[in-house]
Image 1 (cartoon, one colour):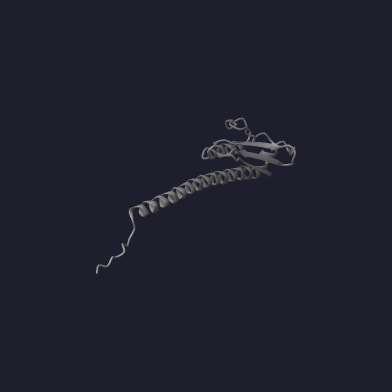
Image 2 (image 1 turned 120 degrees about the vertical axis):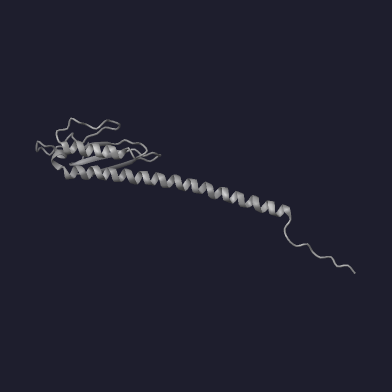
Length: 146
């Protein structure tokens, strides 16, 4: 009497189906990795922009006389005012203000947009608005007071 043994193992079709399922899963993981890296880069740029905005506002606080007007009026001074995309002003009377704005503008070059602006907020006493556009959909803006 002859006994038939059952075949064990995997067929070639089963192996191919397993490889296809695995490759689809790995493609999904690779796509999520790309989205994650893009989000991390965007968050890093926004964090750096926020840091730079705080930095120039702190520099203005430390040079209060130049920032608030050397004439003693307490009105906002133009020495720290910088328009978007403008060059660093050299006509300011205070060399510290020129150095502060020049150092800030040099640090802005590390960001994707590479530019920013400082405006005196006329609606808030001692108010300063610092805007640094982001490299993505969101843009960084920071306000402070002197």
